[in-house]
Length: 115
Length: 115
Image (tube, rainbow over all chains, first blue to last red; front, top):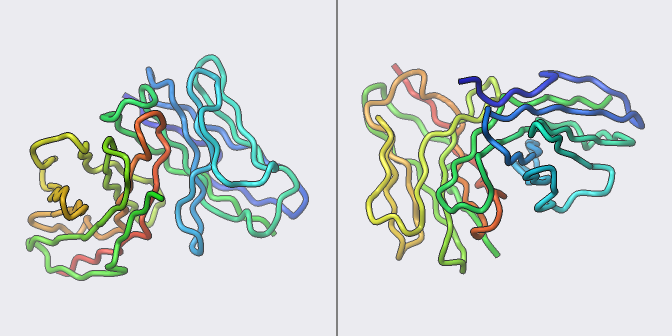
């Protein structure tokens, strides 16, 4: 069974540009959540999707957005990139949302560097 | 507010010995889930073990076990018979409430296994 797939693995962008990251969850999983990991702030929750609906959103500016498609694949977009957006972006998938015993499985992440 | 505390920034252990990584948590929600993940230098976040707040027994997954002490709000990870491949960053995380897959992460413990 394939795991969570994130593309691309690495990205280099310049300030002011926008970027789109992709996440394909494990087959049969309908919940996808996104996290940002930086050396200074650690792992921070961005947003969570289930059945194409955003269920929860972290404390990030509106430049960060996401969506989920009918096949459960998800994308996140960051517009007007800033140097501080340089981070590892991790995607996690699970079968459902809200089940106390539900386990979350992560992908390998997309390393974004903003120059 | 929910919080995860990992007080050990780094630890050394000899190969084949057991090691305990500490994690304490704070929440007022009676329903929660606790996770441990391993993050090697490659960046992927690998699921290790899960403990639900209502689970009566400590969780075990192969060489990993979770020492769950609910009254003390601690969820320490025990790795038995350490291997060189166990060298990585280890994160403790908590699911916030029961209607979301949002995880709150600790700051992590860097484990180095010495031959």
